[in-house]
Image (cartoon, rainbow, N blue to C red; front, side):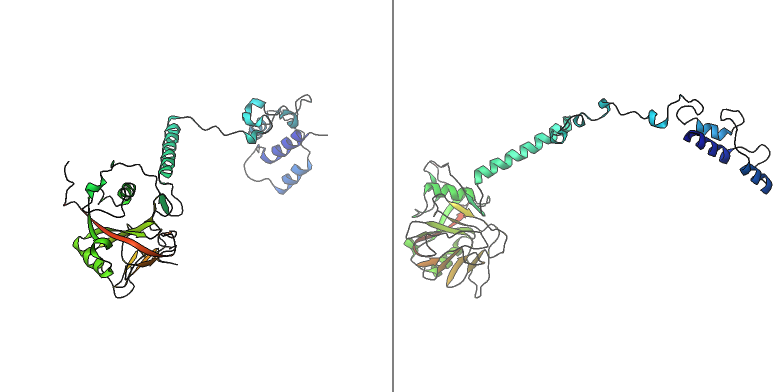
Length: 325
């Protein structure tokens, strides 16, 4: 029985054998003789086709030698060292991938680690949760905060002053505080508060104290301009705060809406969406507070309905300098 190599060589020789006379196609008689005559030419003979010789040169082993290896015998398994090392043992998929330790990779890793550490440090300082900032304060004024105030305050303490200084916009930090309105000094009247807010344009801070000891309020813009309809005012710098939970908490806008504050002739309110974060009645004796979508805050007072004890409105200026010692 002929081996597959001999059969393949025979077919190639039949198809690719060079014509001894001319490249023209053979006659019908010659064609029939060609098919009728068996092919007995020795594959090693010099008469075989040059192209078939070229093709046969690539076949493994000899065709006439019975001791030559077969095609199956020529295939050998790959040596173990040619495979990746992690494939040579069980459980290679559980081994960690080792990344390149090139200089660029080290630089990228150090940069990402630095950014990650900065983020952790920022979170530790602010302790952000549910849209508010809870700050543990270290006094930086050593009891001298009173010299920054134009008048005595019934509500501002040293810790609270430090809290405000860290929370106010950078454009007014370190400026002099001017008392624009106070219930113990100017009487109890929302109209008086609105009128006196025009004395100093710019950001102003509302500080409210309830009968149970909580202090809360928010940042506004002076002069306060009442509108006949409910038209919200303010900017993204507007915020509300409270000391109800022991440590002062600051609630900045969440971006849910732009209901920063309302100023009407008969009410002053912060926030919206569900409830007012803080709403003061016209008589400045009663108010209410509840969760709002604007600031993502909780109730600022001890109760949703509360009685006011004191109220102060402070403006800021760089015109009046800090007195020298």
